[in-house]
Amino acid sequence: MQDQDNSPHAVSEAERSYAKKLAQVYVRLAQMTPQEREPYANKVRELTARLSKLPPAVREVYDDEVRALSGPAKKETKAAPGGDRPATKTDRRMAKAAPVDDEEDEDEGEAPKKHRGCIGCLVVLLLLAAIVAAAGLFAWNWVQSEIGGKRGDEVTESTFIVERGSGTSTIGNQLESNGIIRNAMVFRLYVRQTEQDGTLQYGEFTFRSDMSYDEIIEVLQEPNKERDDIVTVTFPEGIPAVEFANRMEEAGLCTAEEFLEVANNDDFSEYGFWNRRDENENQFMACEGYLFPDTYQFFKDDSVHNMVGKLYGEFDSKMTDEMYAKIDEMGFTLTEFMTLASIVQEEAGGVEHQADVAAIFMNRLADDSPVRILQSNCSSYIQNENDNNYIYNTIAWYYGDWNNIPQEIIDAYDTYNTEGLPAGPISNPGLDAITNTLRYSESEYYGNGYYFFVTDINGNYYFNQTASAHQAQVDALKANGTYPG
Image (cartoon, rainbow, N blue to C red; front, side, top):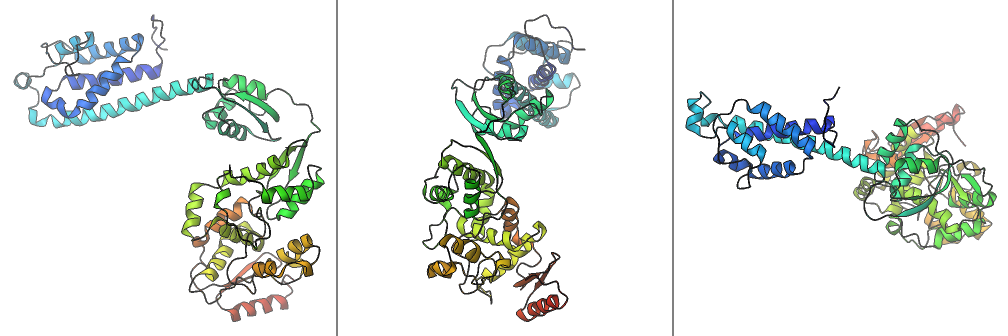
């Protein structure tokens, strides 16, 4: 049990420990001569400032610890550890217990001055311990104010949608990103500690930044009636923008034409990725590659701009500074990188092979590569339904027929006849394809002369260094009936 405290301020264990640490530091400083204290002048001032801020009850714990550490009084000293500042009651107590005259120290059998360096080291260590304890006390007070809704003088209000199926972590992230709370992890831990996980509802909510956690949770626990104006739409990884548009139309949210018009032509510069994109006149869809595949909930009466913004916002939240730095290291613009990631998404069915496939294409794109064309069937002149060819299955569909496609668009996307990457992404890759494309250099096939790969119908991958070896592998797969196509 804790000691009883009759003061108005109940002393917590954290405060008690903090006060004792400060007392230990103070006693050590008081036992040093003024010359010895000189190197620690800043620490003395810091200690003095911390002492001045102690609540009365905590200060009493500090005083008691000082008395306990001081032992029998010896000789009063005129110098308090704080330098020229007025001596406090504690200073006067300490002065009686803190010998500072070197000759008297030696008379009392203490270590000569030349061994006082170890005391200095101990003072530094104790000061660090005191700072850690102070940080702990500060953190505790910060958490208490955060939970209680005391987050500053300026109060903001935000209304946003919590998607159906959102967990506490997702809701906490939304609250933090909208400026309602300061730390999503603290919110999640509080909800879990109070055993309210699973009670939070979905829907549209309005919050203020001065609301306590309990008030926020109460709002989120209000049962939502099944709303017929909320529509859920799922977009699988690797589908093109026109498929996003078709699914939005099928859900009754907008026409496919409206979706593509907004996604390609509206201004979404509020998202960080937006101004990193290239503007290529032969790119089929400017939005391609940045519509993040996931499951979303939309309000039927919402604007198309907001609906598209939800998809763009999700992509923007996935891209980190570290990822952009890696893209720069690759020598790519964002559009070039997303183009490669989209090809990896289409060419590598299994996540475990994506980095290897990315490595093969990076080998081909290298300045000294003997094979400068990518030769990817998913973006080529080949009119084969089974190849999931972007030109044949997507661009031709949009124009109504292959023969209606402008030749410059075909040339910009035909990886069998044009060197380097296509003019833009050929689908909207998921996070796995994006992150694994960034990991291309970790593959055993990167930089080792591998320029070819082929898969069989069982999902096995075969990598080769020469065209002849690759062709022999293809012939073998055809012979045993496992070649896809």
